[in-house]
Image 1 (cartoon, rainbow, N blue to C red):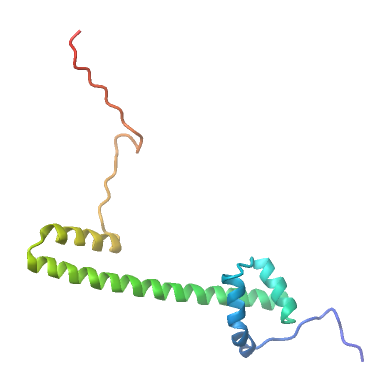
Image 2 (cartoon, rainbow, N blue to C red):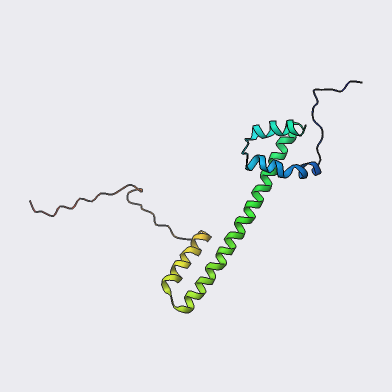
Length: 135
C-alpha cells in the first residue's frame, strides 16, 4: 500500500511543542524571522504542516505578551511603592517641593494628571509684534 506524499507532516502534540519552545522562541526573538519565514522554516525543520507552525507562532506570541504584561505590571507596582515611600518621607521632613513633584509623578502613572491645552492657536507658534514707537 502506498503512502500519500501530498499529506506531509504529522500531528504534533503539546509535549513536542513544549520541547521545541526554546528554539522557536529563539527563531522569533533573536533571529527575528517574519511570520512567513517562521512558518516555512519550522514546517520544514520539524516536518509539520504550515498550519501547525502558524498555531505555534500564535501561541508563542500570546505567551510573550502575557509575560511582558506581568513584568510591566510588577515594575509599575514597585515604582509606585517607592514613590509612596518618598512621598511619606517628604511629608515628614517638610519638603513641599519634593512632595509636590512626587504627587505629580504618581498622578502621571495613574493617568490623572491635568495637561495644559492651548485653545487659542491650536498648537501653532504664536508671534507677537509689539510696536513701542509713536508715529
